[in-house]
Amino acid sequence: MARPTQNYSEEMRQRAVRMVFEVQGDYETQFAAIKAVAQKLGIGTAETLRRWVRKAEIDRGERAGVTSEENADIKRLKRDNAELRRANEILKAASAFFAAEIDRPLGK
Image 1 (cartoon, helix red, strand yellow):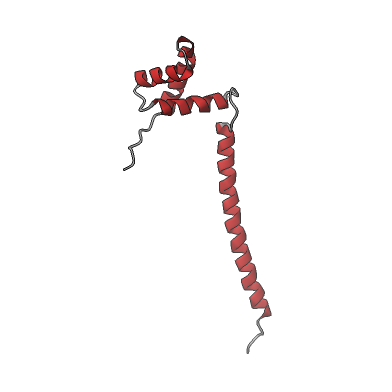
Image 2 (cartoon, rainbow, N blue to C red):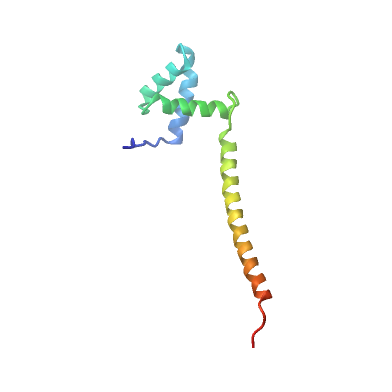
C-alpha cells in the first residue's frame, strides 16, 4: 500500500531550505542539520528536506545538475514535441487520403 503524500507549500519549502543553510555550520554534517530542521518543522522525513536542499544547491549553482528552470524548459519542449508529432501524423494521414482521391478515376 502506498504511503500518503503530504503537500508542502512553496513558502514552507523555501523556509526549510533557508533554515538548513543558516544552521548547517552548527552541526557536524549537513544531513544532521537537515534532520534537525525537518524535525523542528514537522516535515515527514529528512529525505524530503534533503531533496529540497539538493535542488536549491543546483539552482544556486553550488552543485552540478539540471536547474529547476532548465527542467521546466525540458518538460515544455517535450510537450511541444509530442504535439508536433501528433500534428505531423494527422498531416501524413490527410496527405495520403487526398493523394488517393486524386488517383481515383472519375465515375459518372
